[in-house]
Length: 182
Image (tube, rainbow, N blue to C red; front, side, top):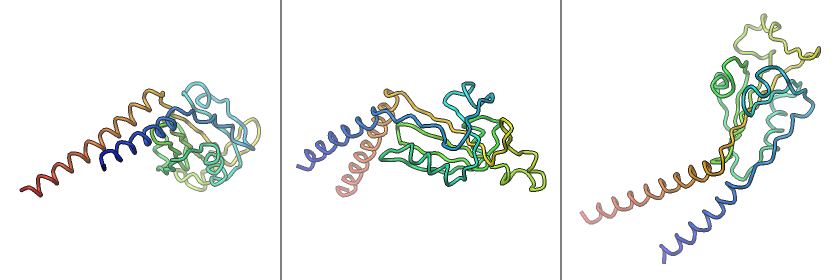
């Protein structure tokens, strides 16, 4: 009876997971009240990257992406700013670096550089990092990068993980049975 219930649960769980994994995520709109950058490195040179000059605060930026990168299992991760050099590009300036992740499906990395808060530059020298784009000064430059694996890769990683977890549980249970019999 327990085995039959587990199999039914597993079938339903996998059907829900399948729908989740094959449903495309909506296209993320351009950041509101911001000017999209067309500078080298902010467009087609790096796949799935776009950048915006803005006067929005970090909270406003993160709330915008939270609202537009929605999913039932979304996870928000906060990284040290230096990590942006590995994920986006090695010359990027960074004040904060966060990720919204839909497990097994897609990741959205958000790098924010606020020149007035640059922790890597002494306060008296920060003015040299002032963000001027098309003749206007901005408080921040937001660079985003998405990573979206193909559907076969999503399915393979999910089902490999599921298989590994089930195998670990079964191995653990067999060890428990051996201990009781010993």
